[in-house]
Image 1: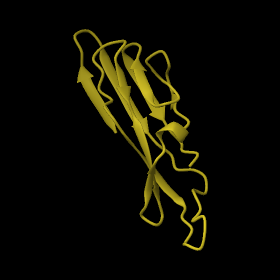
Image 2: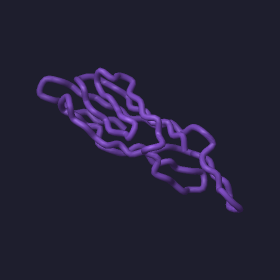
Image 3: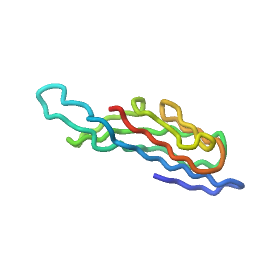
Image 4: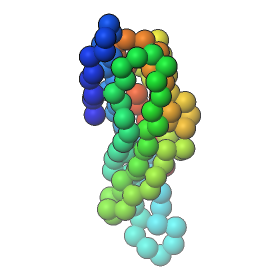
Length: 108
């Protein structure tokens, strides 16, 4: 997911990616087990200036077609903290014009 908005003097680009990793949650009983298939990230990623914030949300999608909200379990990271930072709860804050990739591999 990538959004671009041309600001008055700066060009802000923030791309958001997610990676599915780990074995996923188990069935926890007699039901079929499930494995993590993907992590979908949603939220506004269009910034027009420094100091703006946006809440991103991560949802794990499993092989059995079920899903869980895993925003607080994801390990959020920014590829360029001079452009955008991201906190442990998925709140992104724009810092300056440029490009940054926000990643959220799930520990689910």
